Image (cartoon, rainbow, N blue to C red; front, side):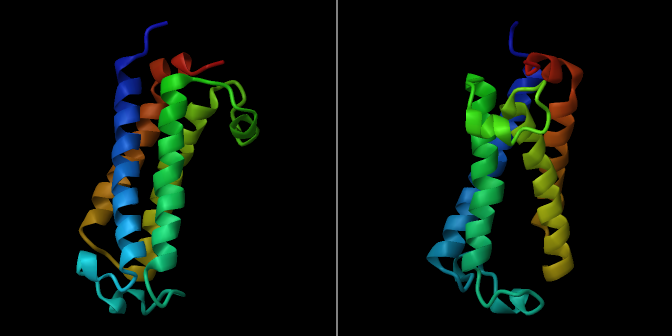
Length: 148
């Protein structure tokens, strides 16, 4: 079966999300004071963090690595015992499920971020990418392509 166009869109959105998360996470790790992104420490006053180091690491892990792994799974459709164990939809390839997880986790991330930090301009854009990932994953042709 030929890969549907919407599967390419899904992979693009995941790659975009991962690239942005790696960029932001690495910047926060390099300068935990937020100065490289012109973000002040006052953003963290309602959070449990004294600087951006841990948020940067979490950003890379959950919003960077997970979508990157999902993208690789979508492209190569290889079996993985480890990733298959984490797949709550066993009738689907784990890459598809990880894509869905990525969209859900991204939106949870943004909701928590808004509750803790307040609003900033990138949040609706990132939330939209998370929702588009969920929508793209749920398109019937995409689901069918990744059904095992």
